[in-house]
Amino acid sequence: MLLPTPLATLLVLALRALGGQVPVLDGVPGGTAVHNRAMIGKAIPQISQITASPGKLRVVENSGVCETTPGVYQASGYGDIAYKKSIWFWFFEARVNPDQAPLTVWLNGGPGSSSMIGLFQEHGPCRIVSDSSGVVSNPYSWNNVSNMLYIDQPVGVGFSHGELDVRTSEQAAADMWTFLQIFFTDSKFSKYQQSDFALWTESYGGHYGPTFAAYFLQQNTKISSGTLNAMRINMKFLGVGDGLTDPLSQYPGYMRYAVSNPYHPLVSDVELSAATTFWNQPYGCKDNITACYRNGSDAICADAQTWCNNKILGPLSGNYDVYYVLSENSDPYTPDPTNYLNDATFMKQIGAESPWQETNLDVYANFLGTGDWMRNSRPLLETVIDADVRTVIYDGDADYILNYMGVEAMVNNLQTKFTKEYAEQEFTNWTVHGESAGIYKNAGTFSYVRIFGAGHEVAAYGYRSLSRGEAALQMFSQIMNDRLLYST
Image 1 (spheres, helix red, strand yellow):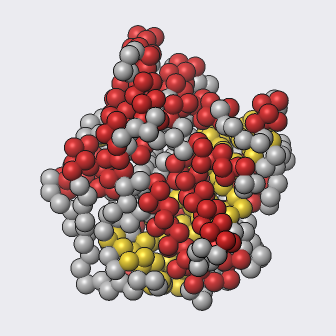
Image 2: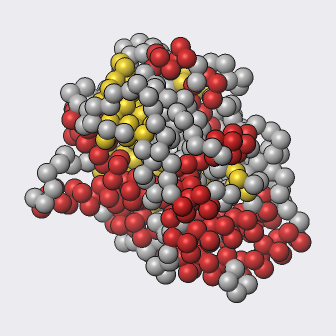
Image 3: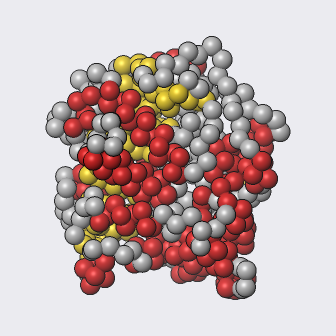
């Protein structure tokens, strides 16, 4: 992939500072060093000598990579949603009863970050080893109970390539709908069109999840009314982990978490006082987000991101890993799969056509330019919950960057048909095989769980006697079996 300069240099420098899904620019998570570029226009990376087939999949079957369980089918490749827009996917059949199992799409966040993060670091059939030299089988893979479809989106993210014309979560939802229509048309996957469909996502997925699910439901309504000729997506489940959904509700959580999280303070009282002033002062962070919510322009919403992340989100992290506060910034955040995924032999095996990168800053810049970060996705989440889509919001209590205090404030502000029931509940201890692993609430088809000892990528962590991903798999299994959360 060719990157325009000087952005190519900026990308290299920024990625050296990345420890996870949220780009770090000028030392600020969710920073805006590419702000002016984003406001000017979009980049169009090109891939040479590749013939796209719009409306079709190009697939490598049973590569033997990652999923090594005998008899379990896998496929990887591209869905060409346009001549210059190819979306990368990797499908893993459920290890048990795949024909009866639901279909789950997994999306990582960013915006601009690859879903191979979730596959190789969290809950895929294999996990990257500590020195990033290879992978090992994951006994707590989510394809134990569901067919799993990992997707790099929007175009330009991860192994996906082509024209970068997506600038908002709504535009990303439309491209995802197009991809899924192509996926379900293919004879290898058409049987899953009738399966229960789940969307699970994290981080910027707090925007993606509600926006995509609400869009799918809207499209289904058009199909039912005869105004759209397409295949229904049988939307049944939504899971959002450590997500950015409602910034106005969530940003005060940075101030609370920085000094009163379960582990240790992240900053001094002086730094907290400064951030609190920046939140409350006239034309400060609170006023900027509020202006964005009031039908704010792209510039107003982008300015809110600049102000709040420079003055509050960044400074209040102190010297700790924003994704896992038990580590200092010098510690690596989960093994980096970059070298493994860019190995030429590996790429040929799986059918990958462009170099992999954890985060594409051109994609991030496009979203930044529209102020998408600071827009409120909570009303869409409320729509999805009220449509009886079984929904779970979950969070790791060692994550700062989208911490549980902010997420729980967002959840408490939800206005759904289950709001009263949820408010009347007390948190209940959640155990996994008798080990205390978190606290939770259930109300109707809505659940929330705070998972102990987990960072931003919840399924990447263990806790006490629990193995990495063990608690996350119990949560996933219970929801995907159309159950409320419960202790085991």
